[in-house]
Amino acid sequence: MTVPAELVVRNAIVHTMVPGAAPAEAFAVSGGRLVAVGDDETIGKLIGSETQVVDLDGAPVVPGLVDAHNHHALAGRAELFEVRFPSTATVAEIVEAVRAWVAVHPDQEWVTGGTWGVGLLDALNDPAALEALDAVSAGKKVLLTDDSHHNKWANTAAMAASGIGIGTPDPEGGSVLRRADGEPTGVLVEAAGALVQKAFAQATDADPEFWAACSARGVELMNSRGITAFLDAGATEGVLRGLARLDEDHRLNGWAVSAMLVNDFVIGAEKLGAELFAVREQTRTRHHRPDFAKVFLDGIPPTYTAAFLDPYAPSADHGQCFRGATVMDHETLENWLHRADSEGLGVKVHCTGSAAVRQVLDAVEAVRASGVSAIVHVAHGQYVADEDIPRFAPLDVVAEISPPLWFPCDIVDVMRSILPASWSTRVHPNRSLLDAGARLACGSDWPVAPDPNPWPAIAGLATRANPYGTHPGTLWPEQAITVREALDAYTASGAAALGLADEIGTLLAGKSADFVVLDRDPFAVKPVELAETEIVQTWFEGRPVFSQSSLDG
Image 1: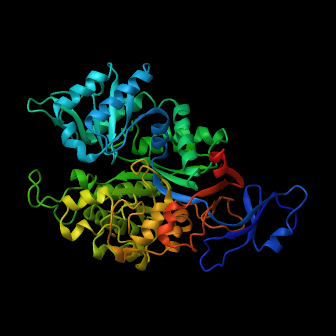
Image 2: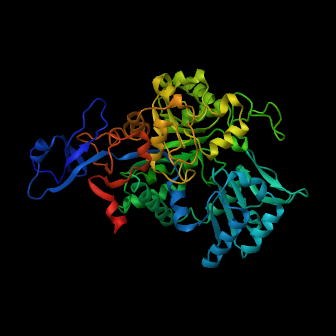
Image 3: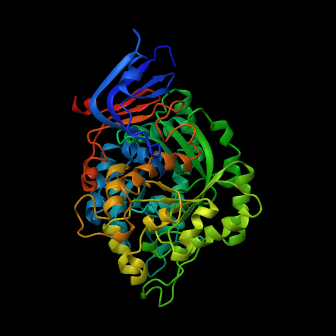
């Protein structure tokens, strides 16, 4: 390029994330794309009288980060429209939070929010808890989620609105907890919660501006964490249309990939599978790519709904040899892989237990033999049998490691209490997966994780220690990976996993000018220090979408 650039960023340490490349010093941007990357002298020749010049005074730069698994619109909705309380809240504190919310929002028909800790389940199952919740609800419908977002607590009005009563049978894949006389207590496990969630969704999904506002807030928060591309791993029609509205109005400051729900026992979507696929092209825009399907194959270990090859630890409720089960048989999963591939869709499969992971690998092996080439993600994939680790690479299955459970934390403590010793600490074999040639992509699962910030997760990947200092020790430290490998999973590898490698992931001429200015060089500090990394600026397509100075001001 010989004509002046629109923007030149210079005097920086530019980590392009191109394998084997030394850091650059500067780059030039025109039309939202990188046009040249190199040293200050060379790039300086592209400065003209109209060029905007940004001198970073030696600050480090990395490509815009990729969150390969979140629920950004639900997180945005929580920020804007929901009652919030910490997962450590007691029943009394939750009830008081609802009372206060109702007092401030008297016209709101539904009160939704969270999150209550999954360890509170027994206390919420006490009929007195439901009586207290009903007493402060003022006739409004209340639906509160737990910290896994797989289980719900509803008041009587919300259950009535969704047809849950004394004679309501448990839905497949879920259960309504009850008093001795059969009356529901309001605690709804897995698919039972989706019954109430669906009633709420019917009141909101028809309004694309509602979901556009939710998405805008979610993207704004991600930009402040350096994230400029993401995959929403449970997109409903409302989320699809909200993202399209945002981009049509030039308000979508990131690359959005949507995974449309095939089945659902968590979110409460109205349209699923083929019916949802049918509307996707109506919502495709420059930056919104509805290019994935989402399959729930099992649940989560704390509710004994994850499917394992070996039994859970013995318990009074589940006996000696309970392994859990998947919610879809092999033939059905293979059929969905074929269907997705025929429509040009990748497939993200939620599976947390080792048996669910194996079922995905077996299904992919079967369909690859018949020519299916779709991108497939094992989503979460916390527990993988040793013999299955070498299968990821030859089957071209992405190990999407999400949420950040690769260090000691509260939920790992819960896992240890319900799983046998042979499994309880073998969470996320990331080193082994990389050594076997697998592609890693990282996701936050936000708002299941309370913050989408990648930097504590990167620190944890490299140290296997809790980056917040709240839990001592390390978790399976042999599975630590390097900082560069961790950052690759959030940039180049993450971009490839989302089908966006031609657009983003590395800082190379021709790619989108998405980059992040950091307060420290990730390759020049101790890994433990990365947890405190701050985002100075985030740029998307050559324009700033976040600046630390805006917070300071």
